[in-house]
Amino acid sequence: MMSMKMKGNFLFILFFVLFSSVAFSQQINTNWNSDLEEALTAFRDCENQSNDCHQYIGQSLTTVYKVNDFYSKANSEYMPVSEIHDFLSNNSSWSELGPAYSQDALQKAQDKANDKKAVVAVYLSSNGLGHVALILPGTLQPSGSWGLQVPNSASFFANEPSRSFINKGLSYAFSKSIIKDVKLYSRNY
Image (cartoon, rainbow, N blue to C red; front, side, top):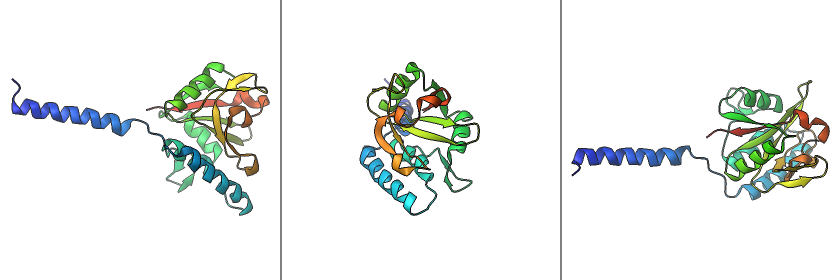
């Protein structure tokens, strides 16, 4: 028979394990699609109000995956693309899945998004300008321009908000001429 002290220790350990797995597991916003639609409308209005629109890129990660990694506490704002690129390249909370021209990396990206794990695609040119797209839950879609099956995505174009979209293939976010420089990253949990 188990003593009361042993039962208490067992219950404590059981509670700790259960709480830990719930506390550190990834959760997704169940209303992510409608919340992103609202954000897209506000983002497109941002262009007309001459505000700094880059905040929507970082906020989209929080909107869908409840991850606020692209918010800079030091600057009290969401990071621009160049800072997101550097953050992803140098942060142990994120892992590179591979380049966007790899069908294996694209499949991994969609699988992870479907498993409620945050995934992004990022491009940064040699002059420091770039773009970030968010991989969304969904299915791979054929891309005529890339010649690959690409994951579902959302994209907020800071310089051209009218080109922004939700629930389109990743190839809508990046032209084929730059996919060799587009990298896919997934958050570690």
